[in-house]
Image (cartoon, rainbow, N blue to C red; front, side, top):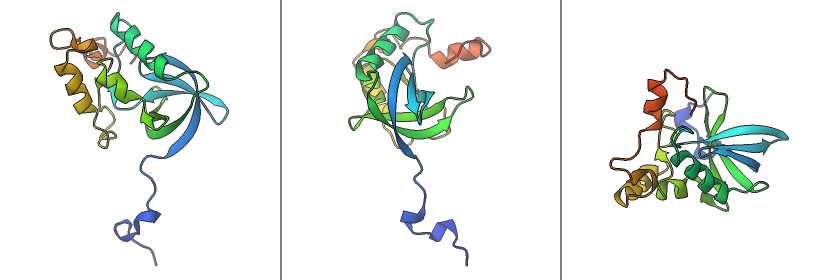
Length: 163
């Protein structure tokens, strides 16, 4: 007898966001971290956010600096898988000492909330954190209306700019 997924007990259903412990090797930019995953260096793009592009000075460097302050090489963090992107990167939330790594970046106005991963971010309240930073005119929101959205710049470049 085969059970329909609708009637499987909850404990049988796989975790929608598998978790794994990894070690931080370096922070590449305001949204990408190189981690040691089972002995290999793997690029992890933080899910549900978009950092300013390197061309968006000084905002991109500010986001990178803030992420570097929270993630030091050698830190053990929990990777919560969300997707893979077109660049082959793992898209994930990172949890450091029980705290979401992206949340402070949003609170400080260093990055944008961004759900470009087909609903993979429905369980996190990044939009609220972004609204609070915007209301307080922090970081990227210190400019009237916020700086140009990185995804608009990528689209306008015909994809030549890499997120």
